[in-house]
Length: 217
Image (cartoon, rainbow, N blue to C red; front, side, top):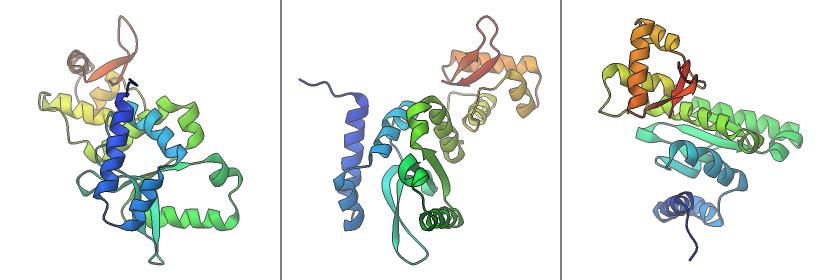
C-alpha cells in the first residue's frame, strides 16, 4: 500500500473542500482542473513546512477588477475577514516575456488589490526553488500581520508579545532587540527568551553555549 504523506493527505483534503464548498461555477471549474505547478511547489516547499496547515487559505480566489470583470489570485489568506493575497511569479511569463501591455496590466492589478484593502505578496518561482527557507520566513512574517494576536494561553503577557514580535520579523533577533522592544533590561530579556526556548516556542538561531540570536521554532 502506498504511504500517503501528511502534506499530500492535507493538500488533497483541502483542495476537495474548496471545490465542494464553491457555489460559483467559474472558480469551481478552475479548481477542478488543478492548481498551477508554481502554486503546488509553493504549498509543498514553503507554506506547509512553515505553517503545517492550510487554514484560512483559498486557492484561485475570485476578485472583481475595475472593469467589473473577474480575476483570480493564486492564493488568498483570509483569517477573520482579513485580505492577504499570494501570487507566484514565474520567471518566463512574468519576467523574460513580459511585454509592455502585460506589465501595465500587472501594475494595475497590484494597485487595485491594494486599494481594495489587500496585502499582496508576490513570490518568485525561482525563490521557491532556490531559497525555500527564506520564503518560509517571509510567509511566517506575512501571517504574523494577520494573526499576531493569537498566541498560546500558556504564555505570560511578556512571552506572548515576544512571539508576536518574532512573527513580524524576517530575521533572527537578539536579546538586545527584545530588550528595546519591551523596554526591559538585557538580562530580563534573556530570562524570558530562555523560558520561551524551554516551552518550545523559540529556538536558538546562533550560539551554542551562549545563545546570541533566536527565531521561531
